[in-house]
Image (cartoon, rainbow, N blue to C red; front, side, top):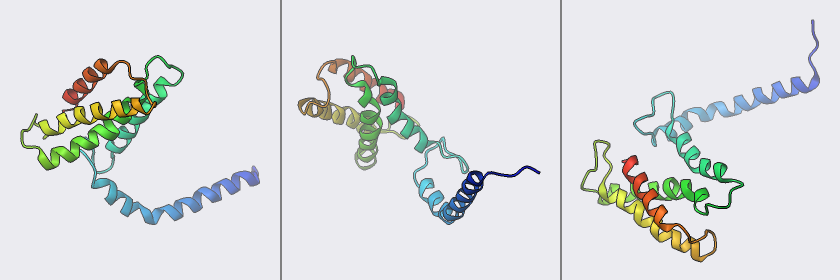
Length: 149
C-alpha cells in the first residue's frame, strides 16, 4: 500500500473543510442567481452571469500588448457593464415600443448609444482614453445595440 504525503493529506482536508463551509450557502446563492437569469439559462446551468463577465473581460485580455486601439479594452465594460445596464433600466421604466420578440425596447437601445456617447468624451477629457476613432465607436455601438436586440 502506497503512503500519501502530508501535503496531499492537508490539501484534501482543506478542500473537504471548504466544501463543508460552502454547502449551507448553496441554496441562498442559487435563489439569488435565479432572480437574474435570462432565457438561455436553465434550472441547472446559469450562463448569463458567466457570459457577462467574459464579455467584459475578453476585450481587455485580447487588447493587452496592443496600444493602437485606444477604445478596444473598454469595449466590454462600455457596452455590457454600462450600456446594457442603462438599457435595462431605461427600457424597463420608459420602454413602450418593442423592438423584437425578445422584449427589448427602442428606449433601451437608444439609451445604450446615448450613455456611450456621453461617457466616451468624459473619459477622453480625463485622459483615460485617446479621443480618436469616435465614428467607429458610433458604428460599433449601433451595430451592437441592433444585434443584441
